[in-house]
Image (cartoon, rainbow, N blue to C red; front, side, top):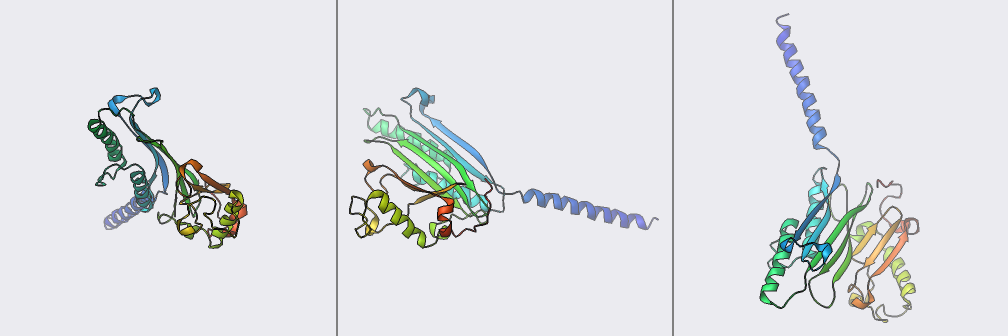
Length: 264
């Protein structure tokens, strides 16, 4: 019996280590999820709802857990915020918190250089998860910003990611080459541009006189949304151009598996 005790102790220790290892692995393999983060900076603690207030408010999704894909997604989100609101010539701001502080500091510098300058700056970016399936994650961002000038800046942007790798998906990875022909035909019909005429013949300014898909394409459970922001293909006065298609009507052009069931 005395000889069995050491062996039993070793056996139970191994079983215990195995259980601890399984628990650790379970914790490490938590599935990719999203939370929401808000960052706000205000000049002199002013209240945006009362007007005449310089402020910035960033509300955006944050990817968590997973096997490393969250870091890639978050890096792209931060890069998007930086490229949308970056007034630091040296591009030093990388984190959203620093970006928000720089926005206020840039306004203060402008106000010091031009004492007569009284117009407040405002920047709001609101982002959310709008669609998720085993093959694609689609995030939508609405931006509303004013930093002087004749008018403010508004835009709608979509970021699409591969849920497995966390890599940003380009349109060509999502759609077949026939999709652009389908969209161009529909666009011409809706904008009264003859099929045999130059795409810019009615005042558009597509680069190189060639039709192209918008930079922002979003997914929902029901539809695919193509969003051309102001200035992208036409003068600011023309506003945005938005094309939306029921999923079923364009499914033939989508490279993602047809039998994938949406998760949200």
